[in-house]
Length: 537
Image 1 (tube, rainbow, N blue to C red):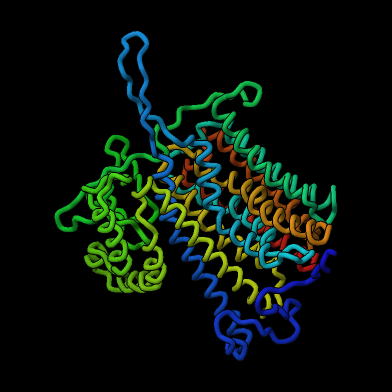
Image 2: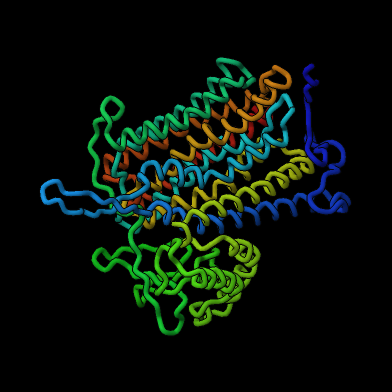
């Protein structure tokens, strides 16, 4: 006999004040928290939420560096020349750039949202109604990815510098699948089975991610009948430009990256300081859990590396994490600037020390650091979920409103950092923009699809019932607003391509005008969606 379904299940401590009436008896760490005033509790929980978002920003730097090592890994291929019967040795990339953008980059930077939605679904297993934090956060994250991140990437290149998409065909395929993801979500919420999700709808949602990968790869390889006949410019051989390591006598364990002399380009990580006098880029130890290494350490360390050498590098990570000042900051004459920087480094110290446990990205071509970074991101996402529940419980704010605004912005911060780094360090706009469009696809096909598949499978087996969506009308309205504003965003990018010749950069005036317009589109989405779910409109 099937067990009776739960209509309203809370995990752990019951969230009793969603409507804003009564005293919220839930707490985060100590039971005595409930004796504090509501206003003070809301302030503390928002501060905790902001601190978690700082942690997400810090781990993103390490995640991006580890992913670079994964993507640039090559394998040795030995071929025999049929004419001379001699061996020909060549090295080819293991990862296809397009697949790396869609899978490693997009999936990795969307992992906070995916983790949050999955945790929300696990907490609501056995409940006929889906949790509201996951879908709301993922739709809000899509808007943050498309508007604010595009706004930042447009102004990142230097004045007059243009960065365009080299393979417009691949971008169009990714864009089409991104738009279809939200059309599909609207269809299953409002057209096929209004207000409920069936097992087959959830399964089809997840399977479409595989179709996206296949179609994008087919476009990249120009497979007949499956690709658009569009020409493309050559993409750089390396996924990111090479860096030249220089070691100085005064500090042998500090990485310094020299700018490319021929092109006079500023190729530098987002977490670095530019020394204008020497045209050298100094990576600040511990600025955001930065890797520390000497110049005599190979760029990639694999199984051949000496274990003592690896341990030496790992030990240096902890030393850097506990270092609050660098030689450059000590030379500054401005006392107030040094004090402000010292306070900021002190605030980041717990995160830096925690993330120092992530293995150096030289090991196993970056895979260990990549996986460990995702584990830390999942842990932070769990804390964010608990804090969001408490804020909603104490304040009575609709969880969807928090998901559209604070959660969407905070969990999308890795997307912002990764796209900004890609826009700075790569010579084309492919990865910076692909991360945005592909992250939006991943949000739906994986971020919503997998949690819904888990819940619908359980409900089907236990109750023979579909998964019900609480505020389906509000979510559908947000999808319509997002779709309308995203058309305007894409139209501006196409207009920039036709007039300026590139999507990113260009004259400073027009770059900032584009940036402001994209931010206005985001504000329209947030305000309209929040008013709808709050029953004001």
